[in-house]
Length: 309
Image (cartoon, rainbow, N blue to C red; front, side, top):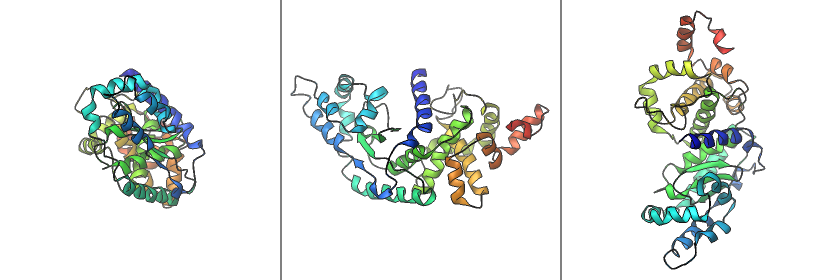
């Protein structure tokens, strides 16, 4: 668990400062949907019982840049993939035809890309790769583009929202100390803008829990937000209570939403959300946690403004 969290953290840092610099297209209509890895996977899958060799070697060798981006920490190598596929053949079979209607989603994603171009004219648009891995990742942002773990799809419901979320990560450049608040603004900001351009809300379980337990969670977050430890808020929980994973997405969304609603120039607000210079000042300007911060500061006998220093 801790190792997975380290990988996640390193990747978030990488995506925040490097991915936005990739030379992707600035034309939303040039968005690339690459599905050849799916065909190559099923060619290899159907050879498993006949071949004396590992058929997934060829799958890896013929792979798109998406395979390269999905190899480290996910696929690992052809032997690792072969071992998992043999154990979970029936699970993989559930996704054999999942991309049959991908053309309709491709049109939808081009519309989402175009919506982002309106809100954020400086946007860059990465290719989207549909690959097969080892059931350990539903998707990620990588230097190669947006990569979807197709084996985890039983249908294409929600794929547009997922792509919209990952798309925003390519645009983001959030500065400031590496603390819980920053990571929540990174993820929650991607959720907020992703929903704005796609109309699709993701992470619904954590959002429902967040709304039902808002008071308790806001009090806790005020005490935790300056801490680099993100346990119980992002990428896993300690099981100390019944909370779901990734409540930080909800918290970051709520702060971002409050900030957006306060701004008269909404297009400028999107630019500021993507390029947050000072997370603490962004929080202050959002006003979302003001009542909780005032109460917390009063208990410490400190001023409200002192909290943001």
